[in-house]
Length: 312
Image (cartoon, rainbow, N blue to C red):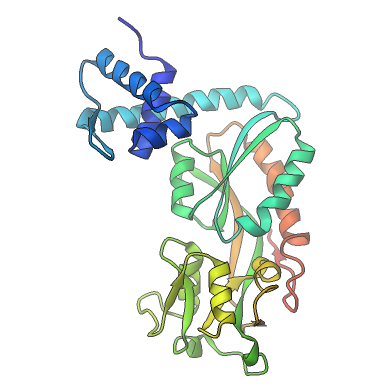
């Protein structure tokens, strides 16, 4: 009888993650028939079905769900053995999967990638942009190596390393530039534009306005900071954005930027990775690069807003 191979485990884990043969095959860079054949072969080896095949998606059987959990654990352990060997190389080489939240990626990631590629030319950099919870889940399951997020994430299996702090600033129509800066209490009564649910920045902004349990009357949602700022420029409302986004997002919109009254809202940007990852020493080097970019690069040039504060 054919033994279960690592290929079987990787392909089935991808199918369990994506819930669709086509998307799983694309993620594994193989054809859909080839992935389907491997999963079918795995089921024959086990003598029981792992998935219920539907027209548009698949559903894991009870055995499939348990098998997927065990497969992820095995794959994570194998990947960490590989990372252990890679950690002995200087400089580091091979694949590096980096997650970044959407309210950081456009402003920090390009410079970070450029610095990493220059310092570690043997790295195969693979960035992924997603909301915090998705990145945390992927880190825990071994689908990412590290992530740049807003802290804390409060996941016991992850190591958190704070890098720098940045303020949130108020963006309002250009015609309002000379008006007094509203307090957090006044913002509750204004037409406030926020990111849609799932973004940690949304929750941080709501918390500043003491709106965690009560949404403002005229709340409007957008899918990106770009959308929010352009809506402000059209006179639709006001919004809060992180300091590092100011230079890019306000250059093509008729808006004004103002610092809020103290205590000003802020967030802590940091890096997270699994505590068991053998590449922790390299991630600490990478954290220094991200901190430098955040302090002196992407977060600079924010007009009247001062640069972020170093932590530690």
